[in-house]
Structures are given as C-alpha cells and as structure tokens.
Figure 1 (tube, rainbow, N blue to C red):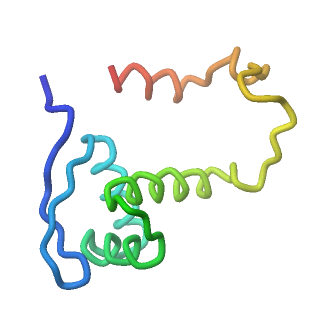
Figure 2 (figure 1 turned 90 degrees about the vertical axis):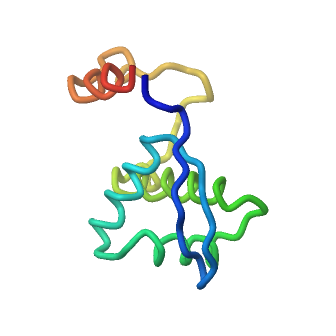
Length: 105
C-alpha cells in the first residue's frame, strides 16, 4: 500500500522547506517541470512568488490544476450547464479516462 502523502524537500527562494503531497501531485509536478524544462525548486519558487496563498502546498495544488486545465484547453470553454448537471460527455467516459480512474484505485 502506498502512502497517501509523500514529503519532499524543496528549495523555495533560497530556503529549504518540505511539502507533503499525494504521489499523483508529485508526478504532475515532475511532468510540468519536464514540459517547461525547469526544476522543481524553480517551479515552486515561481508558484510561491506569483501565486501567493497562506498555504504553499495549497498554492502548488491549485497551480497544478490550473496548468493541466490550461493544457486541456478547458479554461477557454464556457460551461453552459449548471453545477452538478451531467453532460452527455460524462455519460460516455473515454477509454483513457477510464484507465486513469482505474489506475488511481
């Protein structure tokens, strides 16, 4: 059984700190770093500087969601249905989305 949260040391603005995130969040951060050709320390410093929140871990999670939504193009979409209203697309889950949910347990 894998741990629900993993701690990793990161240097943010020259100061060593640690963050506890889910393995999926660390994986997403690593993917973003690879995509953006940067390292985890630089990315977390940028997040801390430009996305200030009272909780840095929360800022990192919010950044990951925003980044991935932008990559999917969802930020440009307007949702015409109200919250909680299933769309036809939700009824027919894609194969890749099914695999993602199965992998997540």
